[in-house]
Length: 384
Image (tube, rainbow, N blue to C red; front, side, top):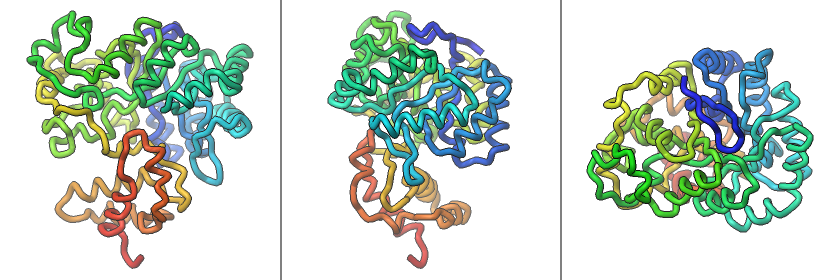
């Protein structure tokens, strides 16, 4: 395993990390097995943005007795209210959720205290200049968090946060589908050592500035959405018309300036092994340039990556899971029975959608959630 310095934190993090999100729906034993496999492979950074009690307890139990081996990325403002995830900057709710994180992780400190999911400049300014950031500073002064970070999907927010001097690192969505607008380079151009020093031609200029600004201010990046929710793995779903491998996606992210680690979501130890293959991959296996050379004219958008930020749903729907099962169903000529059975086992299905649109307002990728719920209900619901 290779390790990289995470910006001005000085922490040395494994370039392959563990994003805990996909473990939410697994048993305690399955979580333990995945975490143990990661630790044995040298993975030392773990992101837990999820507020649900079970996954926090499961991850805490999985690292119990060897907490010191892990750099924990925990979020300030990710709360659990009435059985659902709620993003908030309400100080009372956030303090309760953070205390819960410490208790369930069986620890008295979090390495990276993340200002959670800041996706507008107005919210960023309010947070950085108000009581929420002051609270983070108090936690850092007390040693309860060691460093202050921020998570965002918005490049303008990422740039402003890096320039503010108030954060040391950020969790940011990085993959070629989000980055590329138009490219005129040949495949060889992407391997030229000075390519990134030329202004990253072919990238969305604002996203290019994110990387440049983070380097300039020594703000390290940990990466989410490395695989774009798995859509880059099939030519049918990929905007490039060519399937990419986990190794290629990881290599793309790790070759962005300021990036220290990719936070990959794993369901099984086999998925961990798929990511770890990067550490021994050949140059040919890492080659993403042939895909980028055929990139579309616009960044990937409008497609669900199952991130869960659409929650809370007033109807109690697990929107990300419904979306995932719907996409799995539409990839086949007929709906697989296993997919349908998993769908019908959900407490609330797409048929329960009331069409309020709150999910679409919260979605960072502008997914037409209500349309997808209607389509999923037609395809998957029975007797509703």
